[in-house]
Length: 208
Image (cartoon, rainbow, N blue to C red; front, side, top):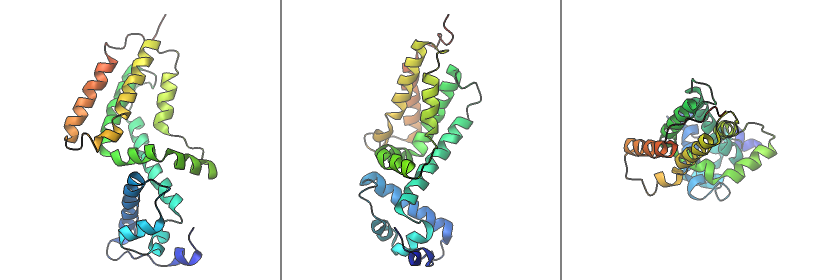
């Protein structure tokens, strides 16, 4: 935890400005949280990678926990954008496929954020509990609600779950096994795989 003196010292922002420095802190923290984990990362390590003092970090973030939550909430914004792109009823197969398609784009564009979330779920959940934060993961809540909807046939819901898991399962592989594959090529292949899992076309949305 930072001291009052640390928090009130001017940040070493130079010509980059406050916004740029804050983003650089988040970028460096994101990399460290992915490669060595949130618990094993210290404010000192973030400051050393940035080339600034610890006081500079505390000028922008009161604690390491605040940095983690800032990254977590950025992913929430990604989720809101994806959900906002769905214009058809949330329980329809068309909405499901539209969201899967949008999710593929978001995963490839914000891959590091998704990986950070997956690898630090325990730390994020603990912070939610300690700070009494009631906001849930929007995407997971949306998918859970859709998969629980009895108005959608069981066969359709199983295929929906398979499509979702196939998309999310690519997270750890994008930056490793498929690191040399262009994003657009990977996106097209992932859509093809998801469509194969969802085929034949969803026809049991309103079972008798």
